[in-house]
Image (cartoon, rainbow, N blue to C red; front, side):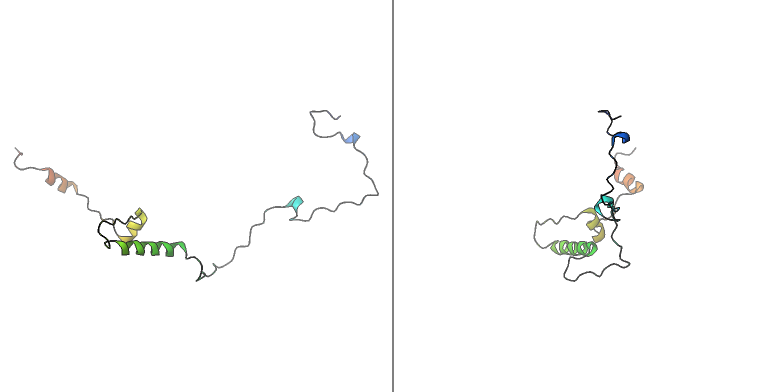
Length: 114
């Protein structure tokens, strides 16, 4: 029985198929009715870089770093900003933290000591 709540029709009320109609062939794989995403084939080797195209990201980073280093000291008051990765690659970080002994020696005042 077909009720308003039921979206599925009662099979007993469906008409018989017309024998004069041609049967519909099943959809071919990959057509709209059965379309599934097909991954693109993966090339076995990386394509060669196009000399006229954009450089790879690592080459671009190196070029930016060289340009920034070339600007350092060219104009008085010019501050060239480096992100942490660039500064690390350029060797701009220097570890000069005090050791515990150096810190104790720096805080020791012989005039105040008992």
